[in-house]
Image 1 (cartoon, rainbow, N blue to C red):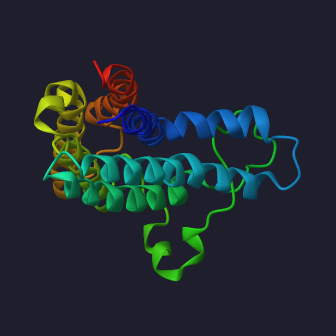
Image 2 (spheres, one colour; image 1 turned 30 degrees about the vertical axis):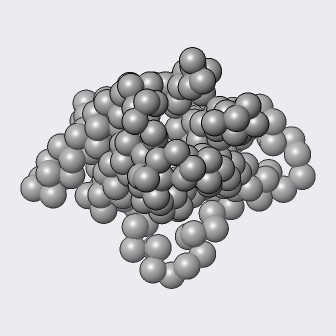
Length: 216
């Protein structure tokens, strides 16, 4: 890779990492930035799509374009692009709720886009932590992330081992949740949802680390 391609690849990995921080970014935006702005529900929605889908998708496309020159597996990033779209829709439906009257610490709220489609109301009242359908999308997202980690050239594969491992941990956690909640419906949030949430956060940090050391 020439210097320009390396710089683009490192930037693209940083952009991809934003999708794993989307909930934290959105909570910060909702609580501290848009609270007193005009039409905060719409701004919060645009912010969610910016950090969860648009910027990571741009980064992924740039990465695939550059990797195409050096890896025959560059197209393994395509499922991850689909995963970004589906998972952002789930985040939209789950996070973009009306602001509760008098709420002081509602972490995320906004004007949902995906909930305006009738069929998405079938998910009304379902939990992002416990619903089998939502878990199945989370499983796809995590496995697609793992597949993306394997799309890099052979000489860069070792650098992607940590993101690969964390993606598989996230996928396994959601598979256990999927099986558990397909068979029964306990009322509490199981520990595997917390494991998944922590794995996703560390996964974002690991992509930033890879961006820093990618050319070394």
